[in-house]
Image (cartoon, rainbow, N blue to C red; front, side, top):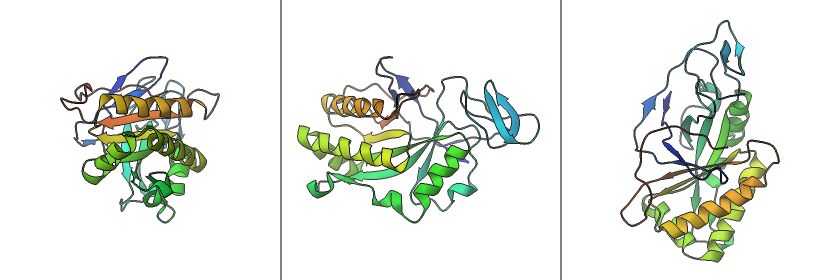
Amino acid sequence: MRARLGAAIALLASAAIAVACFGGEDTTIQSNGGTTASGGHGNAGGQGGSGNTGNAGGSGGGVTPPPDFFVTAYYPTWSRMTPMEMSYRGLTHIVHFAAAPTQDPAESYFHPADLEAGTQQADLIATAHANGVRVVMSVGGIWGTGADNMDFVAADAGRLTAFVTTSAAYAESKGYDGIEIDWEPPDTAEHFSSMLTQYRALLDDWTTDVPRGDLVIAAASTSTTGLPSPRRSISSTS
């Protein structure tokens, strides 16, 4: 399947945030056996790696992410492939793309309708979880109108708190394992940091178990944001 490998930069260990700065390339992931991050379950093969057990078959093989590594695929709402037709081999996370920021206070500036089309949302979360893969909900301020709306939300403290609180509560209620912020590019480093801080605090309260709610970001760097330049690597979100 086609997947974008998350290029991640680990921030402060106490904050436990992984920052995914995607360069926009698609990468093909191929595997032939039980593969997941530490403690997960592959959807085929026997022993997928340390602590990992496949659901069927003999000896495991394929791509086994090292412990604490993070490998994602994007599942957009317009996908013609159903969640049941997908291969989850080699993945630790899937990003469900995307809920949209808006400028409508009646919605608390958050519009998740695209995620709810048909049975896609429930099918993706259930099937991914059955294969030991975590699902994070994307709140997309990606370019154009989406980025403009995210800038609008973040520019006011009250709007930002309403947006973060509503979207995080929604994601938890639907069974997602965390939030991905796709904001390309953030308008200022200050607004970006404020959004991250608020999400991290709410996600920490989702569960007392490890891992907590995951927080992932996809953000393009500009000369005005002060963000690090995108680079390719893999890291943990928990």
